[in-house]
Length: 195
Image 1 (cartoon, rainbow, N blue to C red):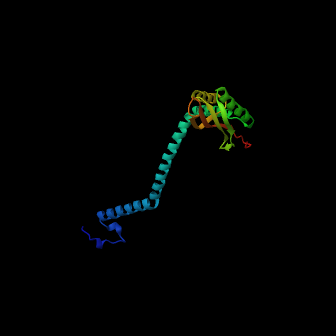
Image 2 (tube, one colour):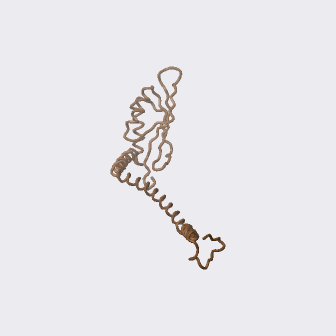
Image 3 (cartoon, rainbow, N blue to C red):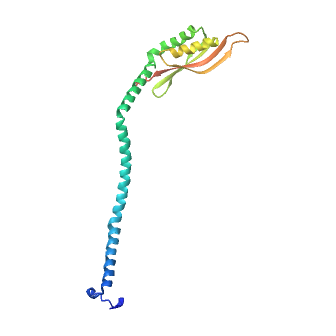
């Protein structure tokens, strides 16, 4: 029963040979599968890939947050220590009423070190983020060791005082006397009221 493809009657498929019917059935099954994939499954696969990527991103975020949550107590303790340290540093910054006393302390520290002041000139305040710098131009006469004692005395003050732009030169042609020019800076906390 050999049939030519042109002899197949499309109106009477039941009389086709088994092989021809199987080919048509397989073709129709393939077409339905392809069309189902093309119009339905393909878009769902894209959505699935996006969901898998989002899952990976969320998993990474979750792992970071879980790690932070596991260390939350340590972070809170560290934060409290930082607040205490910051508070201690703020207490080292004088307020507006303490600045005059601090200037006297700087001057007395120099005199106690055996230095002779040629210049002690407070400069205008320089505002920064949450503090203000108070520069003081100084010129003192003394020995190298007296300069060291003076700087050490400034470091021992209960308030923060730093020394900048230090220049040491001999005084005259002979002798152990030196001249030190520097800028001493102290700092003042600017409260929320702006002063």
